[in-house]
Amino acid sequence: MKKLLICLAVLISTLLGNIATAAENIEVLPTMSSQSSAQNRIWVGTFQIVWNEAIDNVVKKPIKFIGYNSIVAKELNKKAFKKSNISDNSYYTKTGIVSPELKTTIEKGIKDKFNETSDILDAFDFSYQPDKIFIYAMLKKDFKFLTPFDKLSDGPFAKNFTPVKYFGINEDSDKKLAKNVNVLFYNSNNDFGVKLITKGNDEVVLYRTNDDKTFEDFYYDLNKKTKAYDGDKKFNKDDKLRVPDINLYQETSFKDVEGHRIKGTNFKIDKTIETVDFRMNNEGVKLKSEAAIMMKCMALPIERGRNFTFTDNFVLFLIEKGQKTPYYAMRVTDVETLNKTGRN
Image 1 (cartoon, rainbow, N blue to C red):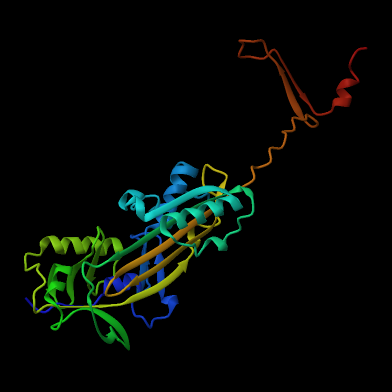
Image 2: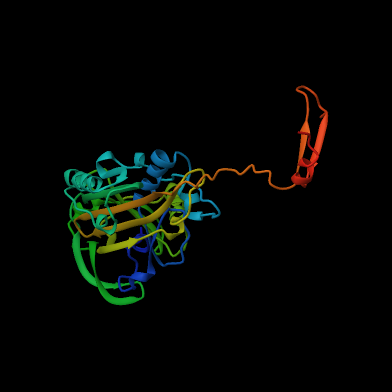
């Protein structure tokens, strides 16, 4: 079997890409099926969680906007990721009327569950606003590889020759590190996949490819190639692993779903935020992500009284109950003239 020269490709596209690339070339996507022209893309399920909470607990149906067809909302409404796709101890959610007490509750909740503080709560106004609803989620992961990988020499990544830090396995590594790696497939030195084993239930899957697709399509291809591969799936003594350290923080808003009135409700989405704080080195992975939606209940349209004022031309009919034909009809265009004919 040819040497596995593992250079993180899709995961880097997903999580950082070229480390020297400017932050504006990194895009955080709302769903795995979202299209993007950014070379460096990220998706995490946290915003999908708050969207699902909005559907289930506030709107009570898929979110559609009046006079606006949102592609992002359409994809989010599919609920491709749910809380059931992750363990209960890995996320926290809270929904409530905007108030200082709600902020305090969330801060206590993430402190008690994750020993974490929020990076986004201060970006929202939590003064008492009974016409607003706040939906919040935090997703937190912190896990170690089965055995720490070796720290390898620094080197370039892709076409950028600025050295970055790497970890993995080389010819000098302890043989026991091979247990950290499951080979998924190896079709060529530009098309391969591996799974890195951790001490818990989490897995790190790395897929090397030059394709440019959605995450949904990438994942489909990865599974298809893994299923089709009938070669050696053991990580052997001559195989090598080389993965860059990753350390990124990104914050984004999904403007496509902000500011539009939701059909069948008096709500509109005022503000959205999602953050991604991801770190990976030879020891393991740390992920912290927050997401929130602030929804405002718009004032009901003022119901003005209808003016049934016959102060201009009108027609009058008299008809008996049960009859289809009136027995009297009158068109009125000049009340004064008519009234002059009346008898005292």
